[in-house]
Image 1 (cartoon, rainbow, N blue to C red):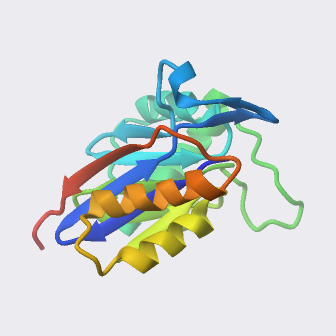
Image 2 (tube, helix red, strand yellow):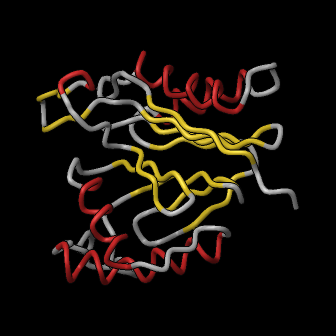
Amino acid sequence: MTTLAVVRKNNVVAIAADGLTTFGDTRLPGPYKSVQDKVLQVADSWVAVCGSSAHHVVLESAFRELGDIHLGSRAEVYETFRRLHPVLKDHAFLNPKEEEDDPYESSQLACLIANASGIYGVYSYREVFEFERFWAGGSGRSFALGAMFAAYNSTLSAEELACLGVRAGVEFDTASGGPIVSHSIVLNES
């Protein structure tokens, strides 16, 4: 699947992702692709996506269709992804079914977001979390979380910590691979 990481430290946020795409048992490593497709720029934010390999192009198109994107707070992230869900259904033909007794339709994706207001996670039922230190997503998340936890109080920068987390996922998770893509942003002063 993937390894994604976001970190907030010393007034900087960072996001990182591995570069491997898989189709069942087939691996498409970064050097074989023309686009590194797990982190996309959406307005003033970086959004890392895990799930279907189609998510990147679908989300690029859906965000263009949606317009007026605000991801500057937990409430704004929720509202943007709430408005995005019908766009995914109507324009990208999203299949929102998971289980019959689920309380809401699923958006079938999980994202981590980094921007000048902080770091966030969005999950399939549009649950939104704001993180104070770091978080990880994808199949390599446990490795990434352990590595970032162990090194957070070191002298490493936010971007170095995010890359460290993803490197741990690449090293130990069979569904993650290089190259690693990362971005960092200075936080707005509050």
